[in-house]
Length: 375
View 1 (tube, helix red, strand yellow):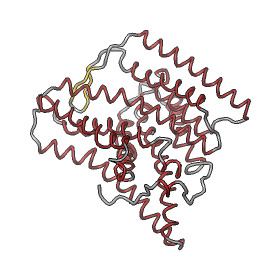
View 2: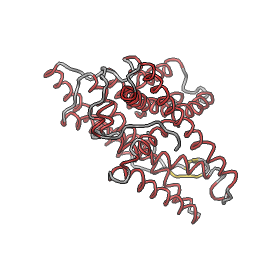
View 3: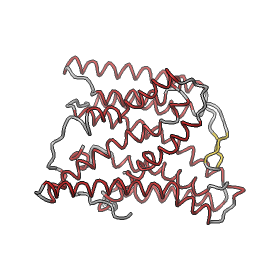
View 4: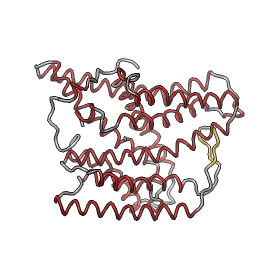
């Protein structure tokens, strides 16, 4: 999960966060919204696609729908991670090694690599950034699933022991490998915003071996959780089960449907935003009570900060994913014969995708006091 100007105030002191003045219900937003946003809606669309839509149906309309939905959910979900790091943790960027790495070192290395490729006209080396992006995207997806399951279960009083956590991770890692292996079984030339990149030609035995690992680890996870049920009489929360099922229908090749496939990034971002919405809702609710004892002033404070946050991630997403790269592509001269006509669009989108994974790896951690307090 796996978040410029005039951003809302955020509490960062550990002492303050340790005792938030909020009562945590057994859900994030509501039982229904949690179930839908965390994966239930994607399972529903998956079922409807398989039952009602032929695989040979044109994907033109759904691809445009996914394109426009990106401006509402997908792109803001990236900017939410930037807000959670660069604003909420701004006082710790140089004092915390993890935040220093994610906020300063990692983006400097990524930008330096891309700038070097452009300066030397090395399109092949630049294209490797796309391969790296797709390698890390699977890792990012399964890390987010792990986080969504742990948090949604904890809300219901269901806690994973270290052994149970490892059983879950050992099953999710083959899902990540499966997504990468199946996208690289055959060498292909693909265009990504005008930059061509090649997929790898991986041996089929690697896919078969990974399927075996996934099956064995799934049985192992089921055994561990069954024993937990026998001992404690508890099962994971329904949102956690929906989240876990979602990653399988997103990534298992046998589940592929062209109509549903276009919507997977949207559902991933929707899952992410559930936790962002809940985190900010609880944060600003707690801060509003510190701000004033008057209920009307508390509501005004909450509304101002909450909707300012939503507006900020929305407007910065529009500039980062559209207006700024389009402006640079139209005004800055570069070798279009080498890089195509959307070089800056390629650079912005590829950079943000890669950097997003580094940010989430340090923000959504168990030892983050904000998560302990508000999630």
